[in-house]
Structures are given as structure tokens and as C-alpha cells.
Length: 519
Image 1 (tube, helix red, strand yellow):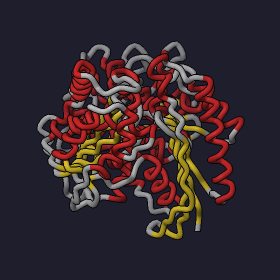
Image 2 (cartoon, rainbow, N blue to C red):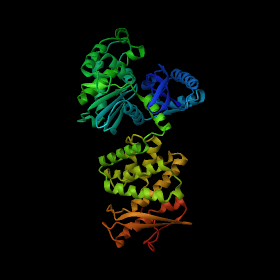
Image 3 (tube, rainbow, N blue to C red):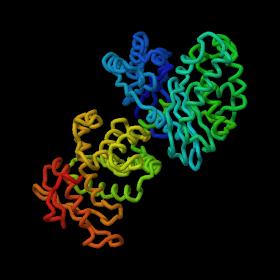
Image 4 (cartoon, rainbow, N blue to C red):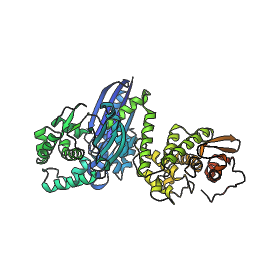
């Protein structure tokens, strides 16, 4: 038996949930708390957390800490989303949370927020064999994730959360005027245009999460095959009725909390617009959210049933989809990845890296030429930009930076602190990048012509020397046809020599001589 806690520091409120797990399938709630701290109020207007809001948040975290201590929690994760993510002074809250409340607060990106919600939904809704659209409506952002047979196909985080929209477009104590309604709708529609994958998506089911979605479901109930849901036609009527009322009148008529009566209207406009965009007549509301995803992951990992290979496969599938978007040479990418992983495994006694690093190497190898779409000459730099500006669900921001840097250094210059992307990494990650890039450079060299002439590379390690022997692919080349690959590998082994402190020899390249001019 173990107890776990999840803390969600959102833009509209802060929440704690504590559960006790006897097994992954036997989980019961021990405690649940909610603190109405609206961090997004000032952030979305001024760009900063107000001192009073920081104080309220720290006090709430202290109270959560006391509940967790009394419950005897064995492990927890505390995350902050859009408001803290965008606040210029977010570090102040993070530092005070740890110093005063003893809570380590993880400020997560929108893609990680979407991933955790997906974890929760998978535990609550059967998505197998179905095309599904997940709509997570938060206070600062809305995460849209399109799934095919449970796997994420595309995801985007849009700045149209309910608190943000309310602060920007609506009056605090009045009904929604026609002018403000028009502005609100225009903003939502423009934001949704960023989610290009919605066009023609035709999901079998739309799943909405978040407190506002649950409140709407209570007022527009619709029984779906997936449990509670929302009748979209009734939601449209409710939207117009609520928009015609001031927040106080909404509270009285619909029995809403004060901090729900104002933001439910933006939520109604967002969800109805999304439903209309995909032609949904109903929306499932399983009653789970971010904190439930955190808890599901904590429990599954504790009982060692977390699908690590499955998670890695999903990230790899996203990388391949990204590569296809930029028309990469998929056969070359996969072949280089296979050779890079072979080098990684054979050089384990030299690099002392782990399975997580191996997975990052594979992603970097798959995407190393994505920048060719922009232009060949500096495609390694274009690749770095593409990776850092793409959502790869399942990677932390640091992991994505590692992947981008490793891919960036597959050719041309070596890692250098004068490069901003490399400099932003801490010392440990810079070492990881150098080691992985050393392997990728050599693997890429052995497929210089993108023809798969080299089947694999055998590594022989002796004191002070690394010997590389290319195995020719009988379907693509003979032994005498590998001169260019060997020559290229010898010249791109410069980083390998530097990182591992060994001379690199390529069998069959004797006498060619090292030359740093060709990389």
C-alpha cells in the first residue's frame, strides 16, 4: 500500500488530491482540497504574478503540505501551468514554494500538460480503435490533442483559457454585449486556426476535461457510451442564456460558485466552437484532469506497470510524423538511427550513459536531416530550430533541447559554448550532447550517400584506440564500394576522439589521413 499526491497550480485555482493505492486497479481517494487562488488575473494583464497572489499561493501550498503530511504521502508531484509558465517573476513563486512550503513546483509546458491529461483520460475512457479529440480547458490555455487508437497524432496549446479570455474580453459585473461577444468569437476562431489538424479530423468522440467542462455537463447532461457528457445543442442554448446574464445573476440562477460564474461563459464559447469545428453532437466529460493523470502515472510507476516501451514508441512515432512533415529521407533516417544505437551499445564502456540517453539519441538520429526542407547548406541549424519549436509529447523541455542539440551537431562545427542552444544546457547535459553527437556523426557518415551501403559498424575497443569496421550491405554495395563512407567516417570521428580520448581508426581507410576540413 502506498499514498500519492498531486498538486495542480492552475490559472484559476489550486488543487490537491491524495490517493491510496493497494494496486494499480485498487485506488481510493484519501483527501481533496481546492484553493480559489486566481494567479492568472494579473499575469494575463501585466505579465507578472501579483505579490498578493504569490502570498495566497504559498499559503495554499503550506496547507496542502500539512494535508499531505497528515495523510502520510509516499510520493507527490506538483505542477504549475499557464499562468506561472508565462509570468515574468515565476521564479519567485517556485523559490518560495520550496523554501517556505517544502514543495518542489514543476512549471510544465503545454505539451506536458496535454500528455498528463491524456494519461488520465486513457484510464477513464476506452479509446482503443477510435479517433478522439481531447479538449482540456484551463484558465490560461486550452490543450487540443488528436488521437488515433489511443496514440497522439497532433497536439497544440492555445492561449484561450477561460481566465485569459475573461480578463481580455468580458466585463467583471455585466452581461456579454454584442460587441464583446464578436471580439471574443473572433479571437477564439483565430486561435483555433492554429490547430490545422482539426480540419477534416472527424473524431469518433470529443472528450472535454477541466472544471468548467464538468460544470457544463451538469447543466447540459447527455448520457454517452463513455459516461457523462454534454449535449451540444443544449450547450449552445445555455451559452446564449448565460451570456445574457451578469455573473451575479448566473450564480443565483444556476447555483454556481463565484469563481465559476464568470469563467464558465468563455468556456462555453470555446467548447461550442470546437464542437462545431469537428461536427460533434455530444462531448464526453469523464470527470478527470491534470491531477488525475499525475496520480495515475505515479501509481503505475510505483507498481512497475507503467508502459515505458509504449511511451517511447509514441514519442518515436511523433518524431517520424514530424520528419514526414518536413519531407525527410525516412529510409536514411531510420538506417542512421539503427547504426547510431549499435554504436551506443558497443561503446557503453566508454560513454557510461543510460537507456534514457539512448532513446534521445534515436530521436536525434531520426530527425537529424529535417532541416533539409528549409535548405541544405545550414540544415543542421534548421533542424535544431524545427525540433525546439515542435511539440514532442513525452519529452521534458531539457530532453527536447538535448535531442535538438545532438541533431544540430551531426555535421559541421563541434559543440561550443559560443552556440546559444548548447550554452543554455547545464554541464551534465552538455556532456551527454557531446557523447551522443559523437556517435551520430559517425553513424551518419557511414550512410554518406543515403544508399544503405553499410549494413552495420563493428566496434573494437583497445587501450587508446577505437577501431570501426563497416559491414557492407550485399544488396547495396561490395567491399570496394565503401571508400567514400570510410573516408567520411574518419573525418567525422573528430568529436569521438575528443570525447572519449581515443584515436579512431576506420578499417579500410588507412593512409587517407585525418582532415578536419570535411565534416
